[in-house]
Image (cartoon, rainbow, N blue to C red; front, side, top):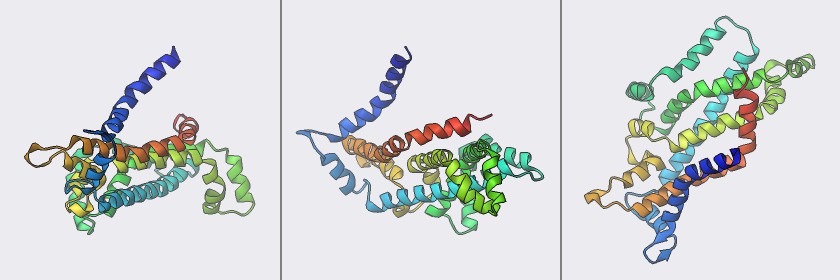
Length: 259
């Protein structure tokens, strides 16, 4: 019964993606890549700079999220300092703030620091919204590692930072992969934040470019090319998830599900 239910749910979730992939290669004369050609050649389609912007945004978001959440999770999980629990709860409280309500304030703040309408500024915003889950995940991942490993490294002369890099990071690798995967999926497919925080078309991400195809002039929407754009954007997410699936599941089992 469980297998039947799992198969039914898999079909339910995969059907829209399979349909998009099928529609993206279906043409009036049969099947081919004509829709993808129009996707990358039309004025309202995806251009090279859109692909570069999405890749750069994803890399910056993943790198920043891993750096901050690793240091924060290590501090919350291994050190006792005044206000630790209060600061951790304050970090989790970001989840209680409605996402859309502070984007305008963040837009103004980015203007103050000279990062308005920039990929770097957008990545900082996405990193901030990744912090609650990422820090929680990494704190629990570090707490799941036996303290004896770290104590042995400290006795051998390693400092806290060296012990973190040489001993702790390999031990929490599944948690790191899980956090990085979530950060990538969020930044790669994010629409609302780039829509508000980016003004220049040459800084648009692929998601904005694909959505622009939905608002073509005179109501003439190239749905086949639109399906090609959806499929093109989904492929990296599927490949990464399939490659990192085992570590992703292990990360949840060893870290996120720990009390």
